[in-house]
View 1 (cartoon, helix red, strand yellow):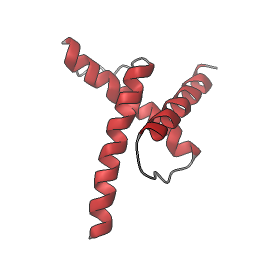
View 2 (cartoon, rainbow, N blue to C red; view 1 turned 90 degrees about the vertical axis):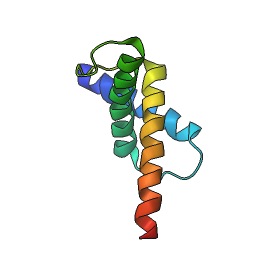
View 3 (cartoon, rainbow, N blue to C red; view 1 turned 30 degrees about the vertical axis):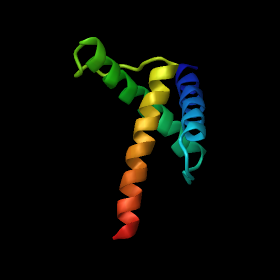
View 4 (cartoon, rainbow, N blue to C red; view 1 turned 180 degrees about the vertical axis):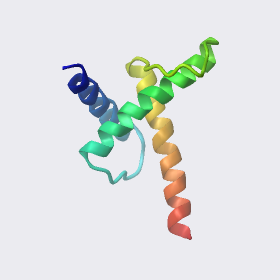
Length: 87
Protein backbone atom coordinates (compact mmCIF):
# COMPACT_ATOMS: atom_id res chain seq x y z
CA UNK A 1 0.00 0.00 0.00
CA UNK A 2 2.91 2.36 0.71
CA UNK A 3 4.31 2.05 -2.81
CA UNK A 4 0.91 2.83 -4.31
CA UNK A 5 0.57 5.95 -2.15
CA UNK A 6 4.08 7.02 -3.13
CA UNK A 7 3.17 6.70 -6.82
CA UNK A 8 -0.08 8.63 -6.33
CA UNK A 9 1.80 11.34 -4.41
CA UNK A 10 4.36 11.54 -7.24
CA UNK A 11 1.59 11.81 -9.82
CA UNK A 12 -0.16 14.61 -7.94
CA UNK A 13 3.09 16.51 -7.43
CA UNK A 14 4.06 16.03 -11.08
CA UNK A 15 0.68 17.27 -12.27
CA UNK A 16 0.88 20.35 -10.05
CA UNK A 17 4.42 21.13 -11.23
CA UNK A 18 3.40 20.73 -14.88
CA UNK A 19 0.43 23.04 -14.31
CA UNK A 20 2.65 25.72 -12.74
CA UNK A 21 5.50 25.53 -15.29
CA UNK A 22 4.73 27.50 -18.45
CA UNK A 23 5.09 25.79 -21.79
CA UNK A 24 4.20 22.40 -23.17
CA UNK A 25 5.67 19.38 -21.42
CA UNK A 26 4.88 16.37 -23.54
CA UNK A 27 5.02 13.47 -21.10
CA UNK A 28 2.69 10.71 -20.13
CA UNK A 29 1.21 9.72 -16.80
CA UNK A 30 4.11 7.46 -15.81
CA UNK A 31 6.71 10.13 -16.65
CA UNK A 32 4.69 12.68 -14.69
CA UNK A 33 4.62 10.38 -11.65
CA UNK A 34 8.35 9.75 -11.95
CA UNK A 35 8.90 13.49 -12.22
CA UNK A 36 7.03 14.01 -8.95
CA UNK A 37 8.92 11.23 -7.19
CA UNK A 38 12.30 12.50 -8.39
CA UNK A 39 11.22 16.05 -7.53
CA UNK A 40 10.52 14.92 -3.99
CA UNK A 41 14.11 13.74 -3.62
CA UNK A 42 15.50 16.88 -5.28
CA UNK A 43 13.39 18.95 -2.90
CA UNK A 44 14.77 16.94 0.01
CA UNK A 45 18.31 17.58 -1.21
CA UNK A 46 17.63 21.32 -1.51
CA UNK A 47 16.04 21.37 1.93
CA UNK A 48 19.09 19.64 3.41
CA UNK A 49 21.30 22.35 1.92
CA UNK A 50 19.10 25.11 3.34
CA UNK A 51 18.73 23.59 6.80
CA UNK A 52 22.32 22.39 7.12
CA UNK A 53 21.64 18.67 7.30
CA UNK A 54 23.80 16.11 5.54
CA UNK A 55 23.13 16.29 1.80
CA UNK A 56 24.35 12.69 1.36
CA UNK A 57 21.26 11.33 3.12
CA UNK A 58 18.53 10.78 0.57
CA UNK A 59 15.16 11.69 2.02
CA UNK A 60 11.84 12.80 0.69
CA UNK A 61 10.33 16.13 1.61
CA UNK A 62 6.83 17.51 1.97
CA UNK A 63 4.43 18.61 -0.73
CA UNK A 64 5.86 22.11 -1.21
CA UNK A 65 9.45 20.88 -1.38
CA UNK A 66 8.47 18.14 -3.81
CA UNK A 67 6.75 20.66 -6.08
CA UNK A 68 9.79 22.96 -5.98
CA UNK A 69 12.06 20.02 -6.77
CA UNK A 70 9.82 18.98 -9.65
CA UNK A 71 9.83 22.53 -11.02
CA UNK A 72 13.63 22.51 -10.91
CA UNK A 73 13.70 19.22 -12.82
CA UNK A 74 11.19 20.51 -15.39
CA UNK A 75 13.28 23.65 -15.89
CA UNK A 76 16.46 21.61 -16.41
CA UNK A 77 14.64 19.23 -18.77
CA UNK A 78 13.39 22.21 -20.77
CA UNK A 79 16.91 23.58 -21.10
CA UNK A 80 18.32 20.23 -22.16
CA UNK A 81 15.46 19.64 -24.61
CA UNK A 82 15.84 23.07 -26.24
CA UNK A 83 19.60 22.60 -26.66
CA UNK A 84 19.09 19.06 -27.94
CA UNK A 85 16.58 20.12 -30.59
CA UNK A 86 18.81 22.98 -31.83
CA UNK A 87 21.58 20.54 -32.62
